[in-house]
Amino acid sequence: MKKVREINVKSTSIRTTMVGDADYICLTDIAKQKNQLEPNVVVGNWLRNRNTIEYLGLWEYLNNPDFNPIEFEGFRQQAGLNAFTLSPTRWIEATNAIGLISKSGRYGGTYAQRDIAFKFASWVSVEFELYLIKEFQRLKEEEQKSLGWSAKRELSKINYHIHTDAIRANLIPKEVDAYHSSLIYAEEADVLNVALFGMTAKEWREANPDKRGNMRDYATINQLICLSNLENLNAVFINEGIHQRDRLQKLNKIAIQQMTVLEEVGNRRLMK
Image (cartoon, rainbow, N blue to C red; front, side, top):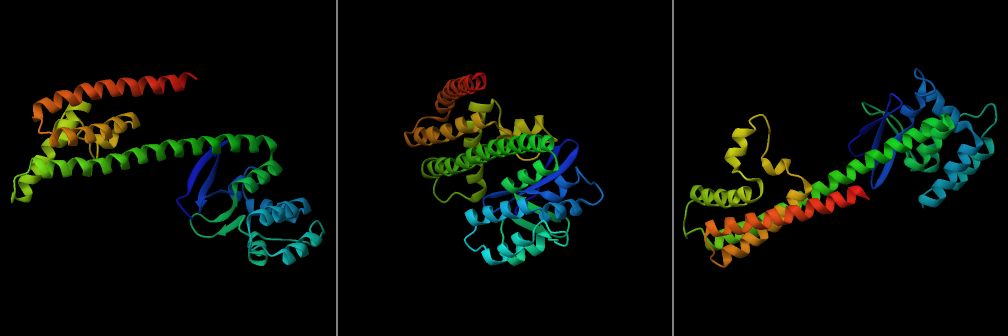
């Protein structure tokens, strides 16, 4: 189970997580909307329902090739009877179900694949289900934005290697020691920093003493896209033997042009 995240739905904290590529939502947390003190009782009552068993069984048939239909049929026939009880753990172990997950410990509780969780939420409260879906969608949109930023940051790192290879091949004398090599790398990195951000790494650190990392860690997606392009272009300029001062002027003009275009594109998307 990947990192557990939380969303707030009508003043109730709902945990979510990923299992493989699937989203799971905590039924125990949802049940607190109906019974704050004994949410497991709410989940148990839901599992006693014949409609619930039939829905869970159909979901497993569609998504789980290892589902045990014989055990499912036994539960289906008993569902709804006064004496029938069923816990999430018993359902999972008897049928090899994957739609529900029972966890103990700090993040303990019963989690369900999101389709099942929404079904449970509608049984608890239709209004709560709508709020849950809205907040869950907002969470996924935030994750996609974060993923996009991370992808651009990784692209920037890849292009950084292209950039440093050009520096190594053209600007670092043979047999130079590691310390002086690092000075040249840092100097060329600051060419890009000044071209895009208008300051060197040292100037940024002095202006932001309370921030960890470096200025690139706080860059926007558009800035990272532009930085990736500048690294490639600077590598080409270095290989062509263009002086550092001239490269800086060229890169600064390109950065201004590209950032203008990128910001205009972003604004047009927001207006749609």
